[in-house]
Image (cartoon, rainbow, N blue to C red; front, top):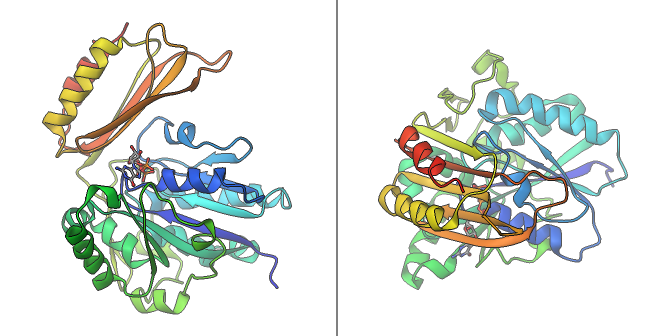
Length: 342
Ligand SMILES: Nc1nc2c(ncn2[C@@H]2O[C@H](COP(=O)(O)OP(=O)(O)OP(=O)(O)O)[C@@H](O)[C@H]2O)c(=O)[nH]1
């Protein structure tokens, strides 16, 4: 028996349902304790606030290019965690929807300190049944996320017909015939199907990517903060890794309340008009005269929003939101949002 701490890497494209799955894992009565590491694209920490779970500790990795900055962050966080060994049973790393999982998975093999103390249990990829087919055409990261998966959670089955589901499943199987696949609504999958799988298959990954175990640095010898605009493309021998150079994030904060009667029509109109370009939106808002936080989320033009939890005592009431997409008119979005201030 190894006493290495198992690590689950949770990946999947923007809005597929990673946080939904993570929250499901954290709220089930499993009696285990997890350390959670999240990494998000966008400048303000919204994801962090959306992860529920009373006593999990959530660590946030640097934004931006996962191959360059995040690896250092990940190593630092894990080394810090190891000093507190015994306080948790497993580590879950949720990557940004735009990340290629390879460099994250690689960290658990290439970095000596990390590999002595932890073991990659599985790469779990959440796929959006409604949008995956499209993403496989226009987003190379989405394909790598499927290729690297040991477990695939094909989520949002409620948004597609049976035929569409069969089609998307066929596309997944063409890329990755090996992973276990679960079809879900709201990421409802038994926790033992995603954690403690002992499923990461290094031999399969080495077939896909012969240079997987080599230290990545010589492929793009730089050590700087690329930021969300980073557009390095590098080739590790097998799969090609990309950063989507057109992808941008617009993050906005109002240091106070917004007026829901202005905000809701504005955001609805924006995602209806710009939905094809806006891949993802999220926000936590202070509505005028409302003691609870309003949380909204969108994937293209589908928006979800509800009141969740009171603002905590001493927590400043502020309104923040982020849009991730292509060809976003930042000035127009900023002006539109600022005009919603209460
Ligand atoms: N209709 C439907 N919506 C879902 C389902 N699962 C999740 N959602 C919604 O999809 C949106 C995105 O879910 P998240 O879990 O935040 O997705 P994510 O992958 O963590 O998103 P990013 O971290 O931004 O990449 C939210 O509004 C969820 O409520 C599902 O099975 N069906």
